[in-house]
Length: 271
Ligand code: G1P
Image 1 (tube, helix red, strand yellow):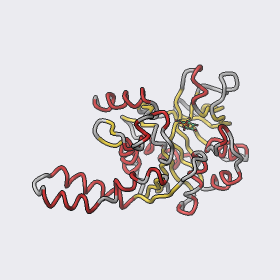
Image 2 (image 1 turned 90 degrees about the vertical axis):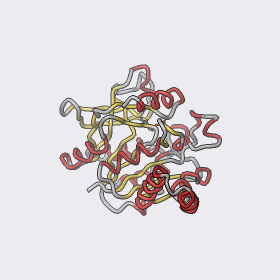
Image 3 (image 1 turned 45 degrees about the vertical axis):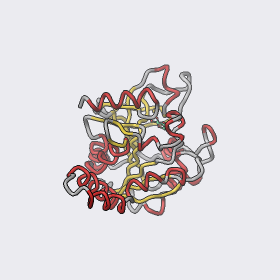
């Protein structure tokens, strides 16, 4: 059963500077709520019971968002008739019960961040959601959990991208099973157009086996001197572990860039 999820939030957010010099990008609102709440709601609606947030000392304000009880209690005492504040506070309290915090203070890549959660993961498979990758209109995590039950394997979300854009993504080598699912034969982190085995990109939803932790531990720094999840997945594929790619049905919104972030607000406001 997939009941635990990891959300890495320790990234520096340089693509959204100067905003991110003072506020974590995940707290920036999209249509009135922090972007990470969309990701949280997706995994809670998919049946996840425990979520691990990876933050850094510089992004402690994310934890504060959930641990500001005295502030809320004082305000609610003063504004007894304001239902909205009470509702928002009870939502935050519900989230808080489900979230654990782990720290990655040196930016050594998403793989290194995930490795820091090793001790907290109790089952054979867990979910990872990258907060820059919003998927709306259809719950991608829920579909992936169903597929995991069917194929009894790791599942990774995918979408086709333009050929001249492959170097922005992890790219799969694959063998189709049916219209929306494929066997992953290999994956390369941000290849050149020449080296890309396809135009199927890895999108930030992974159901991974706990065996990945050993691969992450043994992984040498890859692109930009960072430890990448993609490289650890690659090692497991080479050891014959089964990985299925799923071309999701929802709409993808890239919130990691300024253009994408602005577009996300307008897309979500039209839902
Ligand atoms: C990360 C992954 C990459 C994946 C992408 C999806 O890259 O390393 O494999 O395709 O997310 O958004 P990043 O966005 O951190 O550069």
